[in-house]
Length: 185
Image (tube, rainbow, N blue to C red):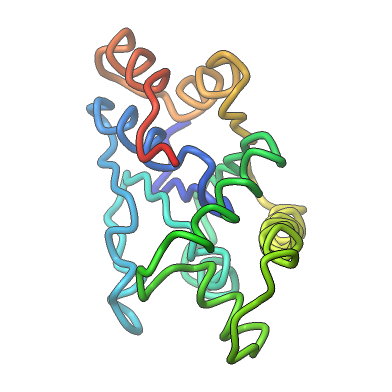
């Protein structure tokens, strides 16, 4: 089946850049990572037809996604080993000064903590973020067309995804790119 849009949902740190790098070799879909993340209003959701978008911030816009993209949409729940994801976010929390960091936004904006978290709280904070986003995704996808892609299952679920969307292009290149690590810790 050919979908109008494919939205890849994840907490982040789950292989979304790798996913899009592999999908960039698909010839019957465009693919991008966080392509409209700095846009407002209608422009934030102006994704083209036959497009694959990975953006971990889309989990905060599920109401708009449901409203704007109700037909012929596939959602991909991109998952990675839970402990590895939490560890990666903990590392980001400790080592990133990036102003738009989702961990900084969650740790100090959503949770409204103006001061620093204690070092012994950082893993729990990262786990709370990942588990919260995972719960939001699971609830949102309950009655929607979706497919789970596991980063570490040896390409099985990613290959199933390719078949689901009727992907065209150099399959060897797509799969070999999927097996590379992008944006590693």
